[in-house]
Length: 114
Length: 116
Image (cartoon, rainbow over all chains, first blue to last red; front, side, top):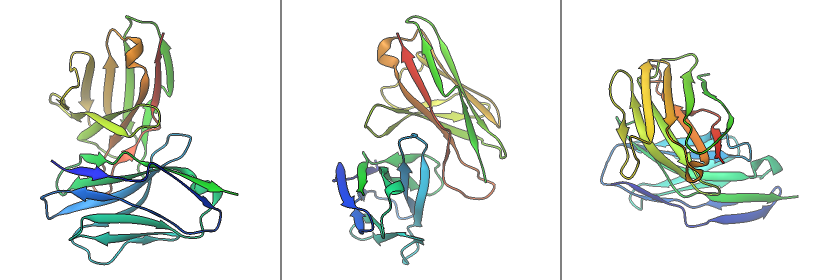
């Protein structure tokens, strides 16, 4: 069975700083997808970034980028130039290729301080 | 983009009554939808996979007679919490994937259920 581990329950950084959220996962699959979802106080789940396991290049979306280390089964999220609107719960998630079921980590609560 | 609509967003009911939550894919067909439950400050826990035209697949520990799922069409899945009790109070979220163009799960806005 797949598991997703987020070892940082809560983090706080100053606005404009860079912050990295950690995520590790365990799977015997070779083909899969990894995601970072953001859940602001509104509780709406918002996709931040996704990574296909077969791609070696790290995904990037504007201020958000990942460090995907397949051998180490690590998938960290870096937020550059953090903004107050980045304050939210962040979930790392795993999905096996061909299966729509997503497994979520426990989440990291991120506070961006003014 | 693809949108998943969930209704109601908030519901309060009395113990012993049943509550139905709807999840609709608005501009795509969803053969599979998922129902999650989220306790305060916790992660999303997958409850069941809703399959159009067939029985739902429940995760271990989820009571299928308590949480009835019906996926009658390619755009609608419903979750009925039967004989609700205060411990069923939670935030319920549905999701669906647009397989027509691979995209990860699109989530509804969730339903906050309070059982008094």
